[in-house]
Image 1 (tube, rainbow, N blue to C red):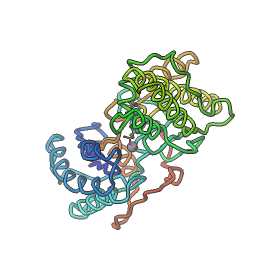
Image 2 (cartoon, rainbow, N blue to C red):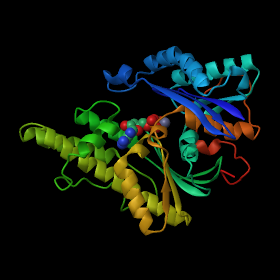
Image 3 (cartoon, rainbow, N blue to C red):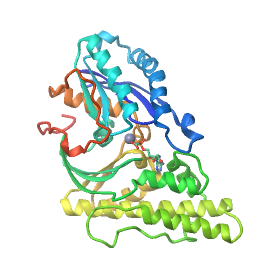
Image 4 (cartoon, helix red, strand yellow):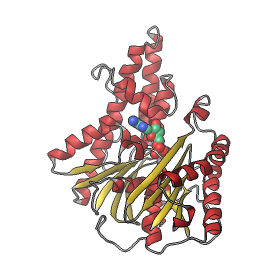
Amino acid sequence: MLILGLETSCDETGVAVYDTGRGLLAHALYSQVAVHAEYGGVVPELASRDHVRKALPLISQVLAEADCDAADIEGIAYTAGPGLVGALMVGATLARALAWGWGIPALGVHHMEGHLLAPMLEDEHPQFPFVALLVSGGHTQLVRVDGIGHYRLLGESLDDAAGEAFDKAAKMLGLPYPGGPHIARVAGEGNPDRFDFPRPMVNRPGLDFSFSGLKTYTLNTVARCREAGALTEQDKCDIARAFEDAVVATLVIKCRRALRQENLKTLVIAGGVSANQRLREQLSEALAKEKSRVFYPAPMFCTDNGAMIAYAGAQRLQAGQVDDVEATVRPRWPMEELPPLPQREVGT
Ligand code: KG4
Ligand code: ZN
């Protein structure tokens, strides 16, 4: 089944064509980062306008790259939530209108299910069941996954999401938005032994996270450096390193705990923060010692993209799931409300 995927939940317009037999045929991404950079965060109205401007040209580019005509497409998958309501509406309206015109089904996909299934796009992909750590700008969740739609939330952030914490720490250090990649870059020049940041909530039982204390600790450390004279480039690098180490250590501890609790040996990490190199290395190292394994998407499919939406939508459309013609979006949408698909082994 040949599926067109459309992602417009935040500040990236992502388009992809995925075939359930042949895999990913083409994909393209337009990032609005430059549009929002001067505001230090995403401006929802500007995001919607840019999706309107870019979505159709990207669709025609991706169809050409996939070497297919509109008439070949058998279904459309678009992000229906969670996300910015206006941005979601652009994708939903466009997808519904195209599906109506082309006489094919369309389906609203859950953005975090897209992230969660992104590792399935890789040749070497995990088998169910597994534990997934979803770490993006808006979510930090540990989920037990027994199949598509078979999700049980094990723990989540009680305040800021991990990506949001990276973005806020970056802002404190005067680094551009989105902050995660910039923190990672300057942390590479940082001295890991200068500051010792707290590892939030690791001494408490359970699988929930909290990053607000770490944020305050970072702010206080920045203030202390300023009081001592000025916030130097080396100070920034050292603080970024201590911050990144603390977030990564916390995530690693909770992932190991979740695997032990669920008696599973496979971990999947997905979402923007899963692009973080130190997180990948530390998780691989820690899990190898326990004969467990971690899977993650290719870096370009960690952050928002159309391929993950095309893949997730393809699985559900192929199973016969469709929505009616009304273009509804769900800015807030718990993933556990998704309908379960019959369980089967992926890739067989
Ligand atoms: O999944 P995503 O693209 O969008 C949402 O669904 O939120 O995630 C974006 C988040 C941002 O907070 C960004 O700072 C973070 O992912 N991020 C990173 C890295 N690359 C992106 N955080 C840490 N290290 C990175 N290399
Ligand atoms: Zn995302």
